[in-house]
Image (cartoon, rainbow, N blue to C red; front, side, top):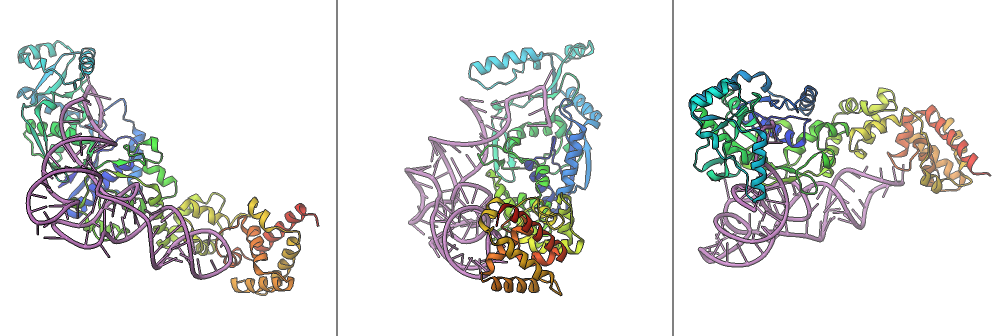
Length: 468
RNA sequence: GGCCCCAUCGUCUAGAGGUCAGGACACGGCUCUUUCAAGGCCGCGACACGGGUUCGAGUCCCGUUGGGGCCGCCA
């Protein structure tokens, strides 16, 4: 049993979801998941793009069993198949020029009709066709479509019928010899013995062409399953225009691959019951095409962020540290501190970007202080009070959350103010912000030296701005 | 325009003739609390519309409307 997603370009979340369903289906049924790169469009296919897709797939955990197979290296196969169809009279050469076809298309459009190739070249006798081809006359190869309704049995949509009038003799091989997508796909699916084709809904309208082609090829017809599209919040097919439509963008935004995998799996499939956070093993065990919905789904970044937070909350600290390290632009504190900081911050960050920033805050003193916080918490007496606090903290024999909290509360008492009057400016002094993890945990983690240095630096800044 | 697909809270969805139409995200409130979160509790909120079929339709059929896709010598 084999499956074939076929991405080209950077890995779009829609393509990723398709590949993911192929993978889950293969794992569930014990089949083989293979990757085929459909790069027959010489103008558009580029090697960097393929490498990008491969790395994005690996990052997401979409490991394939076979491949990647490159269609660009399988031209002999397509050529042979085309010659066979030609010899059997199932396909024929057509000599119209692109300009002529364009004219016809325009005409049809102007008349408000759907354009279909006329089939004029069907009438050219084989001998004449051979002679003109040998003489080097440019031509394409077209499939002789049967004049009957084509029925597609879709695993998700059921029976879908396409009347013969809707189909024309489409092109199999371009005049420059390059096989076209529909043709290479069917030849490859046949040769690779593909049993199930799981792909986007946008291919449903192409499927009758493929069915006709498989028949012409004398090949078994795979089972089809067409997934609903993934839409942007404007309910249009998700594209670059919507921002963050590519897997790589989410990776760079600090999303964990496990979370994106889980999120994408649930875009169109639900295992039943109320579960949403599933392990890979659970998904593989429970995935089934019968439970995949036919309707399109809107990609909601908010929910992805929530799901990512769920994974951030549960991931082992050392693992999370490793994932966040690339995002700690301003350095990391010692490992022990970083590990403790992870526990402190995991409930309040949603991405590894945010975690990286939190981690860096232990390694580098704040560059500035939140202006609103400053306005709110810095009073004329604040420098003096914090100075007193610093002295009291300095005298501490041990440095823990409990001991520093006690010292602060005592200082507040001595000053005749509530603890909050000291807590808020202290947080501002140590972190530069008014929000964050519980203060004394931060104080303990920062260590005596760093905490006192930040506190005194803040006192100096406060004195400078608040003439006594 | 032709052909095709789709239609349950704003969003993701459960629901396979009989449910107070369930859950999650988001949103609002309460709680916890030195701040911000996370967590817990509560709330708001949907079967697109119209016809059938049936004792009984979110569920089946038809139509309307709306949305989407495809109509290339692109994939």
